Image 1 (cartoon, rainbow, N blue to C red):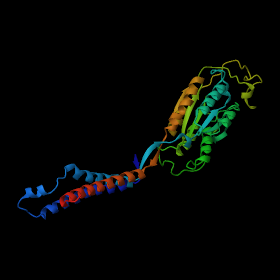
Image 2: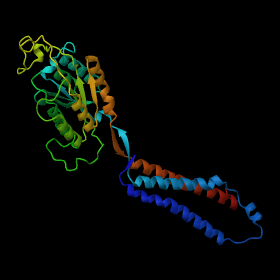
Image 3: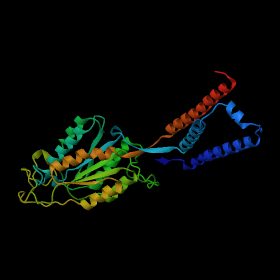
Image 4: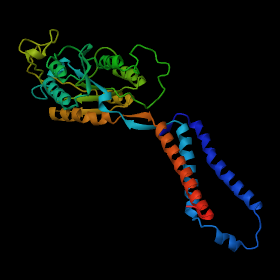
Length: 356
């Protein structure tokens, strides 16, 4: 729990002041008391009042004042963000290396299947956006709850030249900025970029790639832009380091991809091609933004990573002001304390006077 106005805790001084005032009143009454010849007779005439009946109202009243004073400091509790308040931007690498056959039948097909399972597993109210990137990055589907639109878009993925991981992150940030006014778009200067450090927006970016950045903005630079806007980026490195042929079917190849009509690269498509994931950069991107890096070397591992991601994303915590609950609890304690004191005093007074 945190406090927006910690200086308001000065109001807690009311508690020791109350105890001091009570002690002073009791001492003054003792000095002004009338001396009688037989204290025993006076005690016998007065109905007894147990010690706990004298103290309970006082402590309830004092506790109520402490709670009210704490409420005046505007306490905030860290609570999980409901999933329907968050958007997930899924950025998928569609570079030519996604045709690698180290994951059968190829990486792109496996990534498409994992993405479908991820989308279908989400609650109906969850918003998901789709970004694709090769040499450039583009928003294929803006954040939506329409699963049919997302699944249809997954089927249209085509490979192309280059890998622009940094551009994919910036494109995803801009897509979030369109629906979340608390996230400024890229290119906007943020003079207070360091404010609220450690507090993240509910919207999240997930980058799935099988290689390293070859074009556009450096991924770490893009991650710094995301971090300044308190947007977390989770990164997934997909594939193995095994040399494998690049083979895609005709529907998975864009016009500028370096492939022949049979889906193999020119100059001997049957030979193995070596692709290496830039794990150091992907890890750095995740660390800068408060996300996490995952490595998936086959289709099953990729599906598990994607399906487990919402648990991490939904458990993001945001500060919510709970002043009203402190105010209600404090007022209730004060009223109960005063009420018990009045009721028990009235009962004693009735016994002394012979009333009901």
